[in-house]
View 1 (tube, rainbow, N blue to C red):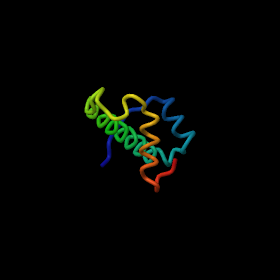
View 2 (cartoon, helix red, strand yellow; view 1 turned 30 degrees about the horizontal axis):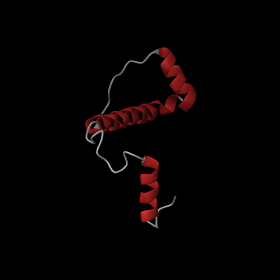
View 3 (spheres, one colour; view 1 turned 60 degrees about the horizontal axis):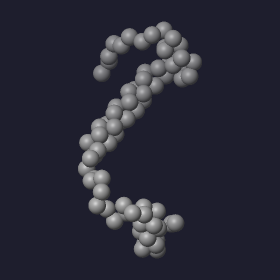
Length: 79
């Protein structure tokens, strides 16, 4: 689908300098995809906030010791 967009001259010059005028559209497609992926990931992070309670975990008193124990419990894990 073709879309008409307006960009500042300096922005277009920078895109052209980096990828060339014949690769503008492809670069913009990649940039929009990356921005949408980033927003989707951020929405997932925000939706997960608060899903784990602040206390009552096995690791509360000594997280480093708990992690070491988890690693040692599984010989296939590195560390």
